[in-house]
Length: 171
Image 1: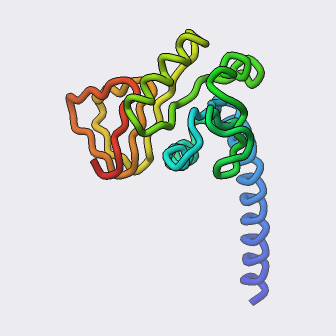
Image 2: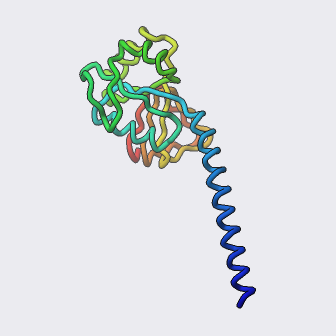
Image 3: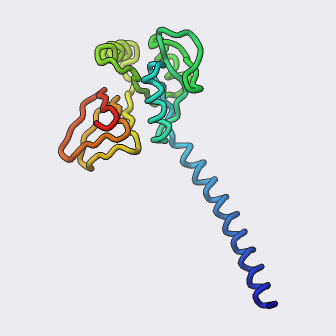
């Protein structure tokens, strides 16, 4: 009985040591990972922007610093502040060291016009793509900049998706 008690105490100490080590290791790994997440901005703040925010958060590749919307002054969407309008993109890029952004506007014509406006204001601005983790994409698929791929999307081999495309849920 005494042997079992000593062995159990040793196992408890070993588990505590391992858990403490794992907590330290996971924290340092998490800190290193967080250093590599790039800052982006979302252009748009309506219902479609909410869907994009969800995808970006689930993808965990970018950190959203805020939103741009020429129709709203102030306020927020899902806890992200509206920082200004498209005209402010160059200043915000410098101020927040932005890697890029994504246009969260569902209407194709409007999305194209916003893209053209941003390219005039900030020609070097980078448009990022975002892909929901529940999308199924073959390994050789080419996906353009600014493209949004939602949950349930299936893209088979030898496919190319252009810039600023939207592949909606389960398509």
